Length: 256
Image 1 (cartoon, one colour):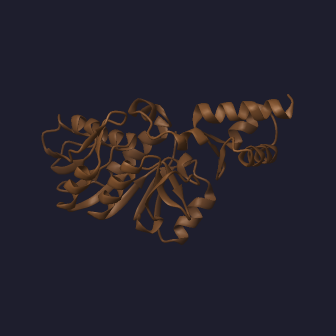
Image 2 (cartoon, rainbow, N blue to C red):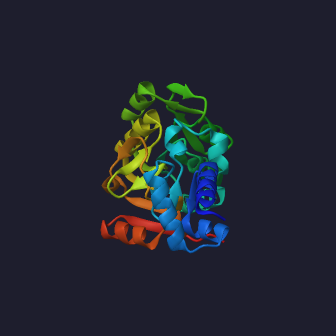
Image 3 (cartoon, rainbow, N blue to C red):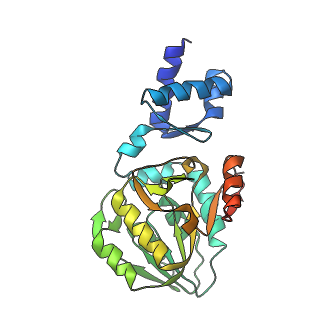
């Protein structure tokens, strides 16, 4: 295969999957990982994709204001389910928590046991999932409806959170960058996630390993504001070391 053809196919794969690892591309094209890294460096300079630590992400991902909940639900579903199951272990009866409108938070809502809890959420899907668990008190933010994510956003949603205090905030994001912090491709989602962090004693970030090294449009908050990160075992060791160096607890969930 000619180099130009390999480059064209790499861009197609990245745009289709939104993110891909160097190791995956190396196997697909039967070339060394070093060759793939050079390919990605060239394609990034040409504005065809963005490199992340250990792979590449689609520039189209940053251009999308917000993926639909159906798209997010199936993307890296295995990793998200494992992360959600680990996050549920941090919940104690009587806790007051806030869940964002991420697909990982929805998976977490499905896993939550029917025990006395108070859950605040801006997600319609999370609220519906918890509605059948009669010991869980569910509070919805209200606000402007985002039809893509089936969640409430905007000033009304943000103000509704200001009057509450919770023990723990569980949220996800589109990108986790050591210098750029936590980010989202949608500004309204970024603002309400920041407010969720403000009202919580502790923030637990739920992100699969593809989110590391990615920096998207709207800043949510700085890494230092996160108390714990839960991710999957595909995370690059360099990121684990960096976060441990910042005294940020990081829990890595093995994937079967």
